[in-house]
Length: 99
Image 1 (spheres, rainbow, N blue to C red):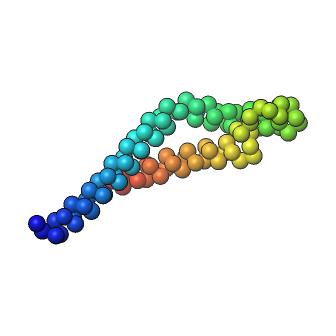
Image 2: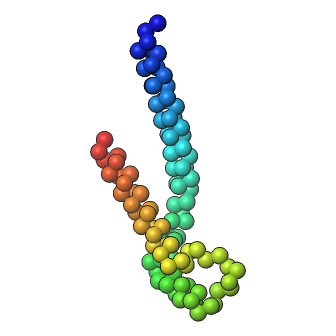
Image 3: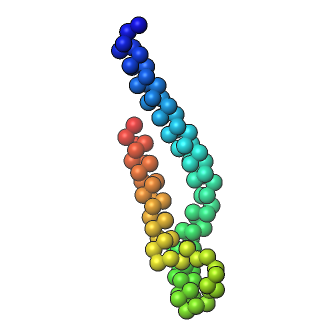
């Protein structure tokens, strides 16, 4: 049996398994991401409407109970999330437009 043949098949099998896992993970992640589109739109409107700022200021005045989770009101949390979404869309668009 040819030594190079076995080595090549082992290498390609390793690549195949790695790519298969990545594609499956990406598919699952994409499905999850597509399911939160309504949430993304709601968060974007919340931030753009000015309501986020009003709620942020209310939190600063102590109007929101201390035990109420409010990560959405963190100083840069929502802005950073929406920026990351835009960057993700740009990156995917750039990648697929090259093909």
